[in-house]
Length: 273
Picture (cartoon, one colour):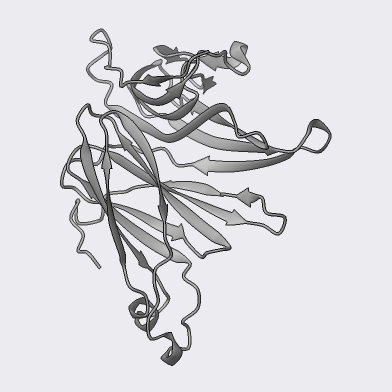
């Protein structure tokens, strides 16, 4: 089957205007394989209320081939409703890999995981990766902050995951700085700055380099960089997250969490490091 680009989908006009609860899943895969490993996502939604909650797809971006749902009898398709106390699996039958966002009429409990499978049937190895769902788009000129990003080559590396839901190209700028336990450690690492151009209605993965070190010989705690903070902003509405990948002894990997961007405490403006 031919692979096609899935463009953004607008919320149906019949959907209630009160559906203001936004949930962004910045990474999604369904039966994606590179020959040695395969990936698939599990996204569950729970209605904690005593009334129905309506859900509708807002946007879906990525590569697609029509395919069925895993466990279709337990899955939901957009648009849909959740009964009081109900937990169901979300199914994206036309999205093979990419990202999507949906809205609900009331707050939900949303959990998302990426599962990697390696090996043959007799000796399969599963790795589960938690994905933090985002709750709002980052607006043009507004800064988002991603905390606790692990970068420590070659043991740990990180990728910046970007999502442009609009139809116009945008420029995304990022600054990454190492966070240490004391000011001398912070000052031993130079911030890394970069920018990328994104096409409209696209997702992009940007490898993050290690923060360069300088004058380390005079500092007791100047080792490899680990915990970082990434500040992002763009010329258009977008979303950002990071995926930290840690290598183990046999060359496979585990990436415990995809962290999503948050607004800084001052409401969207954070001084560059």
